[in-house]
Image (cartoon, rainbow, N blue to C red; front, side):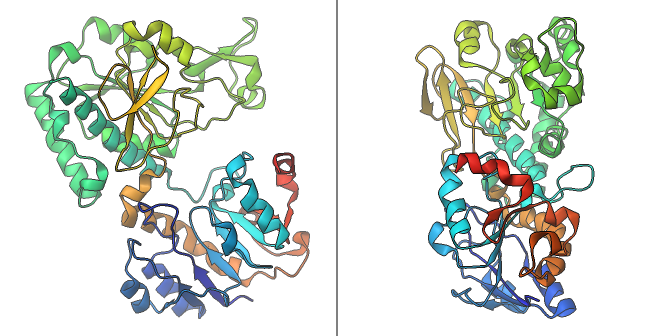
Length: 431
C-alpha cells in the first residue's frame, strides 16, 4: 500500500495555475483514508500553500518519499525516479513526437504511467476532463476576439464590451457581463451589414457543450446547417444564430453508392470526403470542438481559403481542439493568454499576431481552462478524488494482469514497469 502521495507543481508555463486535487479533497483523503500528502511549493498555483496546509498536507520540495505522484501537464525528463507511478496528461497516445523522449525516459526507469485522458466508462466516455471549461473559456475568448476584430475595423458593437476570460474575476462575473451584452443586442441590435451573425460549432461533446453554455446566454436562435441559406435570405440583427455540425454534416462517403454510417466513418475515415466547405462562406465564427487526427478530412484547408477568401464572411475561428496544421490547416501555432490570436493571410500564406490585417483570425490558446484555474481545477478534482484510494492501495509489484484496479484505471495505464501495456503497443512505432 502506498500511503503517501505527492502533487507536483505545474511549471510548463506561467499561465498553468491549475491543480489535479484541490485542498477540500485532500482533506477528505487524509481524514477518511489517513493518506499522507506532500505538495510541491508553487508561486503561481491557484490554491495557496496555506489552503493545502489547512487541509493537512505538507508543503515541501522533495517528493522522493512518494511512490505515486499526481500532476496535470507533461513532466520534465529529469523529474522522474525509478519504479514510481505517475498520473498526468501525457500527450503520448497519438505518438506525439515532442513527448517521445519523456516516454522513453519513463521506460528506462521502469515507471508506471496512468493517463487521465484514457480513463473512460464502459461506453468509452471520458471520466476525467477539462473539456467543459476549454469550451467555456474558448467561447468567451472567441467572442472577445470578434469584438476586437470589429473594433480594429472601426465597427462599434456590443461585442466590444466582452473581456478576455483571464480578465474576469470568475465565471459568474463573465456570465453576468455577457448577459448584459445579450440585453444590448436584444434591445438595439447589431449593425445590419454584420447580420446574420452565424456561429458554427463543429462537434457536440463536452467542449462544444461548454462553448454553448456561454453562447446560449446571448439572444439566440438555433438552426440546422441546412437552414443557413434560409436565414441568409431573411436575417435578424437582434439575435445570434447557432448551428451545430455533426459528422454527417462534415463528411460524406466518397462512393455515391454508400450512405453515411457513423461507426463506419470512425473505422474507415479514408472512405469519406469533407463536405464542410459548403457551409464555410456563410459562417461568421467557427468553433472547432472536434477530435482530429490525420486519418480524418480537415475542416478547412489552406487551398480552399486561398481560392474563396473574398467570398467568405468568416472572421474568427476559435480553434479549441488546436491541432497544429490539423483540422484547421492554417493553425500554424498555439497561442497564450497574453497573445491569444493571430491572423492568417491566405494570399501570402503567412500569420501575424493580433487581430488586424487581411485574413482570418485564429484564437488558438492551448490551455484555455487555466484562465479559470480554481473552477476548472475543482471540477476536475471532484471527478478524480474517488479514484485516488484504489490507485494508492494497488500493489504495483505484481504483474500487470494481476494488479487489481478498476477497468477504468487499468485501461488508462500506458506504461507498467516501464513497458507499454497491450492497448498501447502501437506507440512503439513512434519511439
